[in-house]
Amino acid sequence: MLTNTFRGRDFIAIADFTREEIDTILDTAFQLKLERARGVQHHLLADKTVFLIFYNRSLRTRNSFECGIMHLGGHANYLDSNSVYTPAAAGAEKAYVTERLEDVSKTLSRFGEAIAIRIYGEAAGWNYGQGNDYVRAFAAAADIPVINMEDDKYHPCQGLADVMTIKEKLGNLEGRKIVMSWAYSPSRKKPVSVPQSMMAACSFYGAQLVFARPEGFELDPEQIAFYRANADRYGGSFEETDDMRAAFEGADVVYPKSWASLRHVAPAVPVADWDEQDKLFDAHKDWICDEAIMKLTNPHSLYMHCLPCDRGFEVTDSVIDGPHSVVFDQAENRLHGQKAVMALTM
Ligand code: CP
Image (cartoon, rainbow, N blue to C red; front, side, top):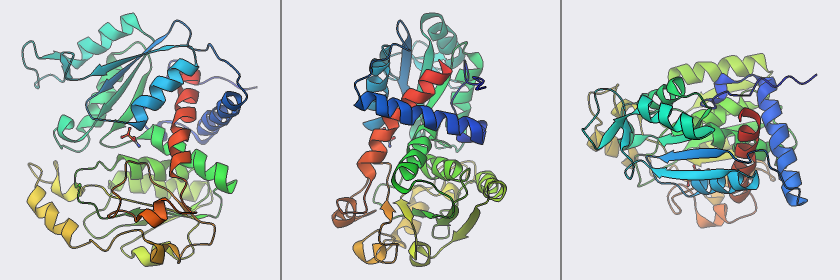
């Protein structure tokens, strides 16, 4: 018997869920995708409102949530954090400009049925973990589910879409060599949320996970410990390397993207040290996904990216527009995965 363990739950991090629960979300996502193609209409969110609070810009997340909520018969209410009294934590308040985030959360709980939030980078003070603390504080005060639309630690909706896309294209992840790699970019302020959630999701499915990055672009050690433990538990493996070419050798999936160095933001340093980080970035301009490095991968390997990507830096046009690329399937699967999360939790 399937027990619904989801009703009323928050969706903040992949690691908050069991393998069986992630399977259920993915099964639901695949079903909703098929039903959408067949023209089946749903009213699962009829009379329900989801508040979408954005502290950062977005194309995919905002539009996939708004469309997904509409597909399920609900109402999406977009809130730009600057056009409401900006929800702020105690101590970060400014009279009549901000509002204590717990007060916002309790108020919205009286009006609607879910709150989704995106907060990272500048909005979270470039203090690693603060964005996630904000999302969890919203959730603690809310009487309705809170969905993480990306904070400075996690992008669970992206992780779901990533694993869904790999399953869709390769059938399973078991024994597959899946590479998450850092890549150079002139934009140096991207959070670590995508690599951390992608590897968390893949670690449940027996993959040979390889994490490639130059020295200085390591991820949160607690997250790495989670991937290792999970890989062990579910018959996979986890390996870390500073050799991009070795990582790509024989890979079934490659996911090269840029992120900021955790060594150069708080709490590792008192305030973000962008000049020092520039030196680190500039030393690794050769970390690009081009046709030459793709030739090292398996003939039918997948090239993945959460988008937006920095063309000509993280990846060449010939790769992202070429036969290995599945980036628009990934983007589409954001829609189906998030619909599944809302259908189950709301
Ligand atoms: N991948 C992703 O979250 O895209 P947006 O920043 O456009 O929402």
